[in-house]
Length: 169
Image (cartoon, rainbow, N blue to C red; front, side, top):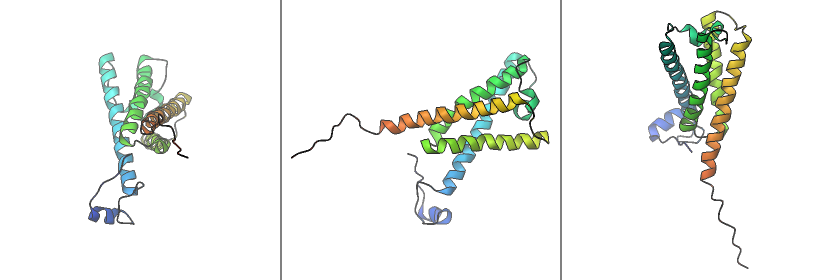
């Protein structure tokens, strides 16, 4: 498990009890911010690499414009591939950063919800492309399910299964 170790002054400033707790709201917000920054950074790097390798121009439109998500042309397929690869990377990042199965759904949905809000602001309107919605739901599903699987495997390693209960009568 991931515990937040802090000084008493820091904990008393950001926590009601003055002691570090498993559910510290400041830690929760910092972890979400870290994960969202990492998710966006890896998406940008993937889009940059694949577009440079394919010889296409690099633009921020590939991240936020819903019209760029399609399977009709090569650049649209590259965008879809980058989003899907990014969901795999973000699932492993979620496993490394958060390390809790219960928080995987919350963190992954929050990250993709904030991407939706950023897309709404960038496009000045609602995304009307069905392929964009299918891609976003697929990515959030892949991220959440894979992260939960990885976290559950890690949590189960600490439970010994080979010892039988010994009862002395």
